[in-house]
Length: 463
Image (cartoon, rainbow, N blue to C red):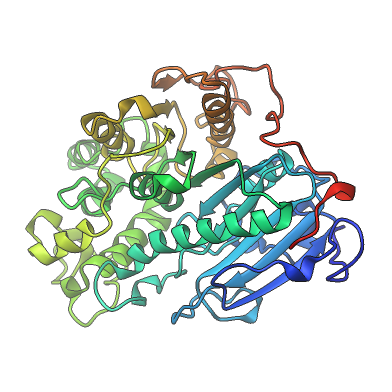
């Protein structure tokens, strides 16, 4: 069990009190025997609610990673994040393992989750490989995230600002802890976190060496975006679910909207859990005038049931200022550092044909195709926890994320370019727990050190 030690204990956490996160309004550092969730769940240095439902239930948890964890927040005016009883947004976590490989991994969270959301899917694994790790809550959380900011689009725009802020601060803390800056800084994340990776490599490539984008959200002022696919699902799914003479036409309409043939078994869950809520919350963020004084629409309203029903939303018909609001956060494809994108072919929250297929084309059209590798993961869906419910029909994307991360390491360290983008076929049998492609090599189980690793006894004093 991990346990916080005295702030300036001798040994691996000496001079802990001298670590300072630049720009933080508040921080709290702890010396832990275990930085992964194998220890942080018990010690209170993570929150399982943040990452619930994102990974398969039998995901193994590495252990044996002692080091320093710093929790805190940057100045902010919104209060949606209640972790630690702080009721303060722009919260972050920075983890600094004793045995450091010289690298730093930074991440934003999927959905509107808080800063520990990636702990099981990403942080545990990269910490066990020797990376320092930092994550942000993106500056606003929960179903009321759209209240943040003064104008439409402000809340999502803040996500980008907060990851940039955290990356700069985390690089400085790494230099304090290890007496030298990171030799490599990598960005990664899933869903909204994947969007952040894309945006950062387009707008701040100087901060990063590369990134892995796990089914990032696509924002484009002219579409496609969430608002060009989700309303179609809300309009047509009820007729499909009801059966009868209109069911076939409804199914075809869903296919035309981007929801792939063969994904029908996933539609009931997404209709109940994701489609309506996602459409209403994000539409409120970018187009609050659509439903007047009503906040975030009317839950599960039927098409044609009255004004302001999101099932009747037509993005192309909305005023120019709505498109401008989306344009403030849109992607261009002009990445400046190597990027690997993975996306499941059975994603029915962010349909692949309306998202990563389009983004890959944008990168090519921007003349940055040599910096991008795109792998379509056959039978992957948006949330890996659904693999537990459909083990014979789905595969988890998490092994493919790890394989892609290892491929990025080889690309950067050895110059081994990953294979050209392609669809990664699903092996026969139950849900596979490995994903050999797109890794370029199996010769390394752990990454070669980017710098000579530091043992606890050799950790330099913090200046």
